Length: 121
Image 1 (spheres, rainbow, N blue to C red):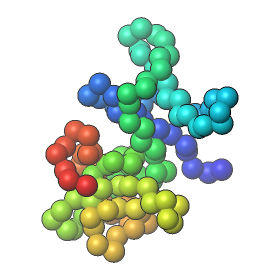
Image 2 (cartoon, rainbow, N blue to C red):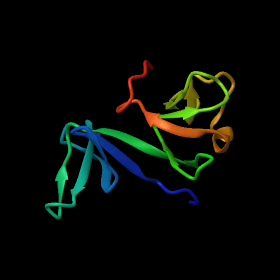
Image 3 (cartoon, rainbow, N blue to C red):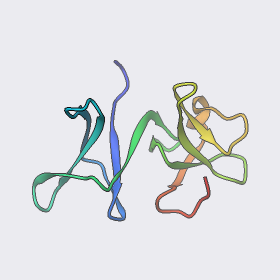
């Protein structure tokens, strides 16, 4: 596998980049996502039930910034596009930018994200 599988977690008003994300099954075979974050000040891993998990797309913008789910990308259109996962096609897409795919994101710029910026999805 060539691309990095990475996550960040939005919780308590900030992103955590040192995190582990996994799935487990309980005795009823229901899937549960188990996000864990590293607290540098306490030097320990803690469970993060209230966080929002964002996956790294494996791509970078024109400035070399890693692009994650929920990021806002600026192109030559006025309105920024939102990076979202599309279950129907099994790929990341840029919602809000007409006819733009993740293949052209190297021409775009990460200008924020939906958690820290007021943007309607």
